[in-house]
Amino acid sequence: MKLADFSRRSFLGSASLLAGAGLAIPAWARGQSLTQAANGFGELSGSQIDLSIANHHFATGGRNGHAIAVNGSVPGPLIRLREGQDVVLNVTNHLAEDSSIHWHGLLLPFQFDGVPGISFPGIKPGEAFSYRFPVRQSGTYWWHSHSGLQEQAGHYGPIVIDAAQPDPRYDRDVVVLLSEFTPRHPHEIARLLATGEHYFNRQMQTVGDGSMSLEDRLMWGAMRMNPRDISDVTGAIYTFLVNGHGPADNLEFAFTAGERVRLRIINGSAMTFFNVRIPGVPMTVIAADGQDVDAVEVDEFQIGVAETYDVIVTPPDGSHAFVAEAMDRSGMGVASLTSSPGHRATPPPLRESVTLTMADMGMDDMGSMDHGTGNSGETIDHAAMGHTMPAADEPAVAMDHSMRDTSLLPPNVKVGPGLDMVSAMPMDRMNFPGLGLDTVKHRVLRYTDLKARHANPHRMPTRQMEIHLTGNMERYMWSFDGRKFSAVTEDPIRFAHDERVRVKLVNDTMMAHPIHLHGHFFELVNGAGMMNQPRKHTVVVQPGSSATFDLTADEPGDWAFHCHLLYHMHAGMMQTVTVRPFPEVEA
Image 1: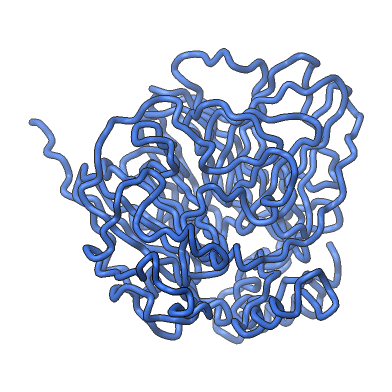
Image 2: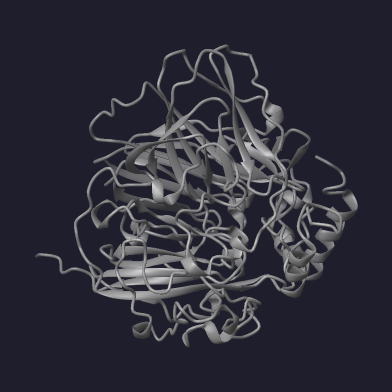
């Protein structure tokens, strides 16, 4: 641990503040002896699985501090299930606060989805809760706390569900869970972000830094925006982890020359988008968010928080660096994929910091503006949504490019202190590979490369909906349609059971948001054709852009819908989706 990160003085100061506020100081903060959590996870399987949540210490590289571990490890254990089985997961909470586990990406009765305040009351200190559900799918998923900011402290782990029928496409199966660790208390991070959203950004552009023209610098200044505002929390305080191991831990994934290795890559981080590559080794993507897609070979892909990608690699004999570089290039997680145990691969250096452009704000291509169609070509009726967009041939000068023109917003979006940005021209950017990857020379995965391997039922949407992702970055306020979750808990997004809805997400902010819907898969409108649109549970909506999906609301109940950047969700970018009525049960 670096004393600069968490000195005795700052510790005592934090403890005094807690005591002064009349809040109970947790046992770990009072100096109680805690067990060191293991780096990495074991594996549990079967029809009954027991999980135990408790405080621990955690250490990697030069950093150590408090963690919330499950069954004594960070990440918690790999839960390995089989499609078609029934499972009971008994979870005991040994913390001094409420806790929970959400099974991310799983189709299950909503009462067992694990979101306090939406689908169940949470697990009280010292109590246990049993999750019971049939396993209806296969693929790569993960689990995590949905209580407060516990996920940041280590409360997460992977899930693999083996298909009912053997999959012959690979010889070796490797789970790769990406995350971050910091000795900073997550509520301290949230407080500092609220006082200054650039608090952890050590890569701000200075006057003589970079190649941006004076004209562009003046434009960014006029917008009061920072072109290096890529990530809220960075490598300044994060150690980026691969399966709970920092770069200094020399983690190895073994293989034998000639083997086809399936890497199940999960982004289980709180706040970090990663760029994943194995220099010199092509990766064939075969699944996204646990769902099979037609094979596509790439050299790199960006994985948003909460997404999963399965790839197959056939590395040549030797050692190869597995690199998960943070999107803002402030650090990386590293492991060695090696056929020679003990031989460490040399990772490449960090690449240059990413600088946003007007294109990243959707501002430089008037001709490609999306004025009413998704990639599938179906027309979206903005008038039906009460949203009037400018005509395609309207002169550019008629629009306010300041990203402050609230007249562009539909009437259902609340304009107030929580909204300080408006996307002037929200283009569909399914073809965008991710910030910083649009200029690399090798192959990079794009959403438009994804095509469902198994055809979906053909159903046209009968209703359309537009939801705006909104925020005030300077005040660190985040919301949907200008309303924080605390203001809309009694006004959920409503779907009729089994109705088919086309949902367009418009990102009015200058940050990428991974938007996750619980309990369902939706189909990305990415040009793959209605029956082969890829099914996902999380979609990244690029800054100043839009993304569209089709949803068949066939899972009745109440479900969370939120940005999976932990501090954005915590600040208010969350909603409840309710699907009614429940189907009648035959007597």
